[in-house]
View 1 (cartoon, one colour):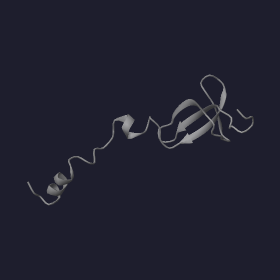
View 2 (view 1 turned 45 degrees about the vertical axis):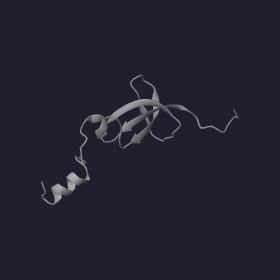
View 3 (view 1 turned 120 degrees about the horizontal axis):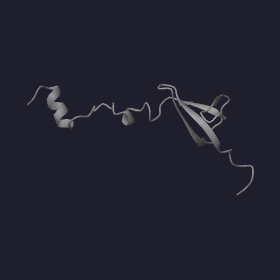
View 4 (view 1 turned 180 degrees about the vertical axis):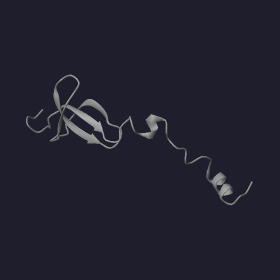
Length: 81
């Protein structure tokens, strides 16, 4: 591999801003913010809007908008049997 062309891969803390869920993972993202983790070390902090703690698919709060097919929706819309 060529030297000095790859971003630095390091451990960072991701913070889900909607649920205050934090997890430690590896990434090449950079951040000015830092946070002290449970192990006593300080890591860069990356804020994310959604994670497995707040995504409807993982939390089980997913809505089923498309119940039935096109014909069923048409019949329901026009009060047909």
